[in-house]
Amino acid sequence: MPRLSEVTAALDALWPPALAEGWDAVGTVAGDPDAEVGRVLFAVDPVQEIADEAVKLGADLLVTHHPLYLRGTTTVAADTFKGKVVHTLIRHDVALHVAHTNADKADPGVSDALAGALDVRIVRPLVPDPTDPTGRRGLGRVCELDHPLTLRELAARAAERLPATAQGIRAAGDPDATIRTLAVSGGSGDSLFDAVRAAGVDAFLTADLRHHPVSEAREHSPLALLDAAHWATEWPWCEQAAAQLDEVSDREGWGLRVHVSRTVTDPWTAHAASHREPLTTFGAPN
Image (cartoon, rainbow, N blue to C red; front, side, top):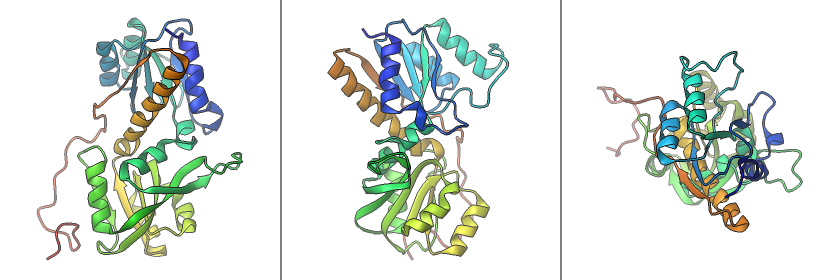
């Protein structure tokens, strides 16, 4: 079996830490570089439920998209929830490695997996990485649909293709508007509105859209917006990332057993629909 240092070197080659934003915290959080790795679990969030799942699975390495410690800490005491995660992992010899904004910008990256889940054709990055001579890395993706859909139909496709969450898919715009081009960005995307408008797409699908940026975006243009749960837009990357590590394992003869967590760690757990119909609905037309 490979050592942890060999596996994390392979992960860093797939998602180079140099691509990460300056504020980010990526790389190996816990683990002995000389420990052997035979089983790996991919997940979005390094929460206690996922740490327990890694232990139950017998994983030697947990790879998550979101960092455990993003803004620094002064303690890993087990009476804090993050400290308890660290204690659980170390006690059971499970290493933790994070690929966050470096995985967002990579080729392929988080938004490639999101586009794949939606079955749309990738044209180019939404915000290209200026250091990439191939022009394929960067944040978000600009995509084309194989055939036009209405916004109502596109919202229904997203609801069907992305993992189910309490939120589902929210949409802003004329439900009968024709969508031929689409920008996507896994995770929080309302900081990308300028790039989306510059791309000239018909719609933008992302997560964590806030009232004021959405209101302003709708005033600027007829751009249609689709807002999915943060976790749901990033979970497809776990499957893509696991397949990438599988390829490395086969090539190197490591024999790794690679798994993807199906545990829903989206923090929203319930949704109550309004009792009165909204003025515009994405249900069946009258």
